[in-house]
Amino acid sequence: MDCNEIRRLLEAATDGELDVAHQLAVEEHLGRCPLCARAVEGIHARRTALQTALPRFTAPPALAEKVRSALRNEGAPVRTSASQSKRADVFPLWRVTGLAASLAMALFVGYTWGGSRVRTQALVDEAVSDHVRSLQANHLMDVASTDQHTVKPWFAGKLAFSPPVTDLAGVGFPLVGGRLERVAGQDAAALVYRRRQHAINLFIWPARREAAPPVTRERDGYNVVSWTDGSFNFLAVSEIPAVELADFAEEIRQATP
Ligand SMILES: [Zn+2]
Image 1 (cartoon, rainbow, N blue to C red):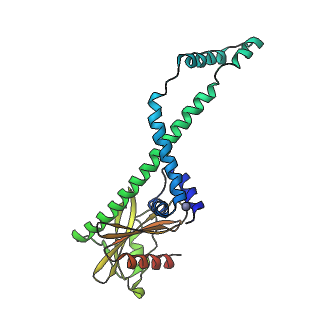
Image 2 (spheres, protein in one colour; image 1 turned 180 degrees about the vertical axis):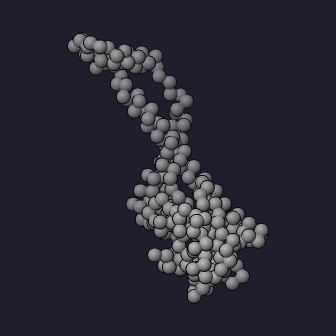
Image 3 (cartoon, rainbow, N blue to C red; image 1 turned 90 degrees about the vertical axis):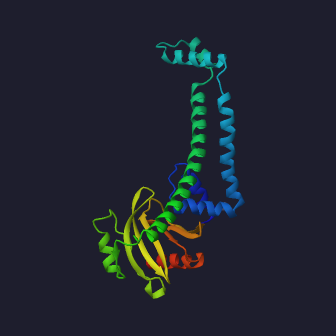
């Protein structure tokens, strides 16, 4: 993703609505682009400055009286030309509300940006622990089949969406089954693939945003790749090397229309 796309996502981040793939794409970009990183620093700096300044912001008595007088004038039924010229002197009320609104917005931006980062970290942690649990508890699959035409219909009626199911046996990643999972508080399909003696969990759930390319993360010895194709979020977890998991992601992307 280029800087323009990232800047567009920084705007979206203020809504706190970035999914894991976009959030990771943004963080990955910020790690290698000083210009965009500075834009985020600006947001952080503004937040810090406002947090420091905010408790000291108290209206001086003169200002408070002007605001009160403006309110009184607002309610006055008849306005003489004298009272109108007097109104022109008072501190405009819209500036006070405008200032309050921009303070609130700046705090909100800082808060949601930090919040979406934390949520993304939590989601990666959650996916890794789902993966580990699925291996340890011998609960890797609810439907065990190497046939994508068996696995795909199995999800029908269990999920509100139909996940794309592809077998990659031809390129060394055979499909072995699937199960239901919860990811980020949403229902997700977990497809299970094999690479030699290792399992790959591929979590799939509906996306709310346009496509984002794969981003790789390492967590506690496990590799995580996430991306979105605009229709679905994909998150693959495995202990296989990052390079192989990236190949897996690429094969899934090419096979998913
Ligand atoms: Zn950039």
